[in-house]
Length: 230
Ligand SMILES: [Zn+2]
Image: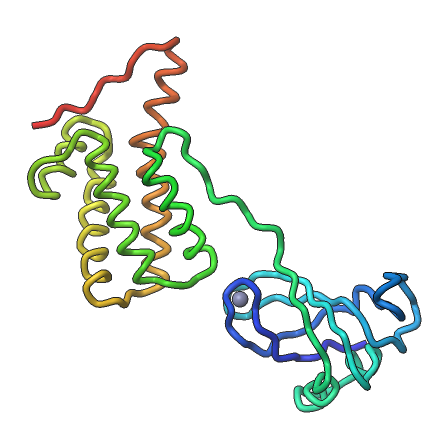
C-alpha cells in the first residue's frame, strides 16, 4: 500500500498541511465493536502522520464515506487522495503531552507563566508572546534574586559580580531584555530566536535558582551565600 498525501490540520501547531499518511495501522469493519480486521475493504482505519511544520508525530483516525481504506492507501496523487477523502471525517490524536520542565525552587509566579512560554516554544507558535513573556520572567527573577532597584544593566551585572551567574549568562540576559522589549512593542519576533531565548532562560533558572538549592542540600542544610545587592 502507498502513502497518501492528505490535507490535515496538525493537532499540535494547528497549521493545515499536506502530509503523508503512514499505515493503515488498524482497520475496523465496525468502529463500535473496535474489532481489528485484516480485510482492508473497510471504511474506518487508523494511520500515523508527521507534521512537516512542527515535526510532531500524531495519530489519525479516518472514517471514510464511500471509499475504502484500501482505496485511500492506493491513491497515487494528492488529487486522488482528496477525492477519496471528500466525504471522510478525520480525527487527529496528539501524542501525550510532554510535561515542561518544572523548577521547584523558582518563584511560583515565574514557574506558572514559564509553563505556557515553554508550551508555545514547543509548539512553535506565538514568537512575540514567547519573547516578551521571557523578558518578564527575567525581570521577576532579578527581583527574586534581590535585584529590585536600579536599571536592568546594573541589576544583571550585580548578579555576575556576586558570582551567581557567569558573565556569558549576564551578557545573554542583557540581549534577552532588549529583544523582549522590542517584541512587546512590535508584536513580532523571529521564532527560532525566541526559542533560543527560552533555552537560555532554562539555563539561567537552573544556575540561579536550582543549583544553589541543590548545593544547600548537599552541604547538609548549609545556606548558600546570598548575592550581594548594591
Ligand atoms: Zn504541526
